Length: 336
Image (cartoon, rainbow, N blue to C red; front, top):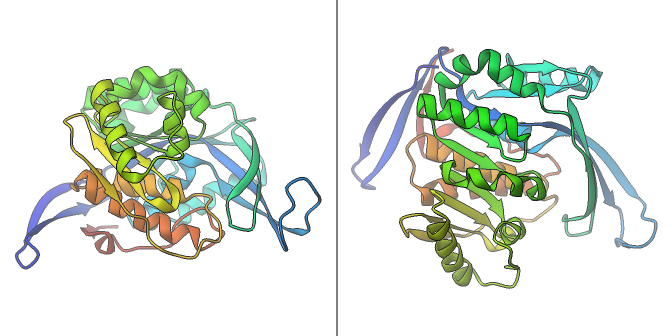
C-alpha cells in the first residue's frame, strides 16, 4: 500500500486531518507477536471465588498481537501480521478469519507449537478474576525476519511489537526499524517477561501498558494513585528514563500519557456498560498505533485508543467492531 501523506485543513475546527491513500504496494502497520486461543468462563449467578460456579465457557481467537492486528484491520487499515499458528484446524481458522478481515497473512507460518492458550475466569463485573497461560514457541518468527524482514519492514508504515516475544526477535525488529527509519510501538502480554527487554525502552516510540504493569516496570505500586498523581509520576519516570513516549491505562479511570520532553496529559475513559474487559487494552494500543502512524498527536492517539477500547468492553469479543477511518479523524482513500 503506497502511503502518501497529505494534510487537509479543516477551517471551521482549525485542526489538521491526515489523509492517506492506500494501494496494494506496502504492508500498512506491521504487527509482530503471538496468536493465542482464549478460553473464557463467565458465571451465571453470583461469583464464588473459592467455590464451584455454574456458567458458560467461550473459546475465541486471542493473543495481544493478533488482537491488535485485527483491531487495525477493523478500522479498514490493512495491516500485516508476522506470526505463527499451529497445524490444528483452529490455526487455519485464525488465518482464514484474519484474511477475511483484510489482514495480510503472507508472513504467518505454521509450526508444531505455533499458538498459545489463555484460560481465564471472570467475575460478575466482567473483570478477570484469575488466569493462566501457556506460551507458544515464537523463535521461528526470527527466521521469518532473517529471510523476509527487509521486504516487510522497508514497506511498513510503522511497527507494533509484542515486546515480550523472544529477545532475538526484538533485536531483529529494532535493527530493521533503524535501518529503514520506522517507528516502533510496543504492547505487553506478560510484563514479567517484558522486564527482560527493558534495555529497549529508549528505542520504542511509544510504550503502552496498564497501571499494574507500569508498577512492575518502575518497581512501585500505583493502584491507589489519582489520575493527577499518576500523570506527574509518569512524566517524571519517562523523562528520567529517556523513554520517547509512554501511555498508562487505568481501566475506568482513563489513561495518562507523557513524553521525554516533559509533555503530559490525561485521557478520560468512555462511559459504557462493561461486559468483558478482555482485549480492551489491545484495542487501546491499536488505536494509539493508528493515531501515531497517521499524523495524530499523543493526546489525539489516546482518544482513538479510548474510542476503540470502549467498543470492546460492551461485548464478549476480544476486538473492536468495524469503524471507518474517518470516524477516528483519519481521512483515508483505499485502493484495492
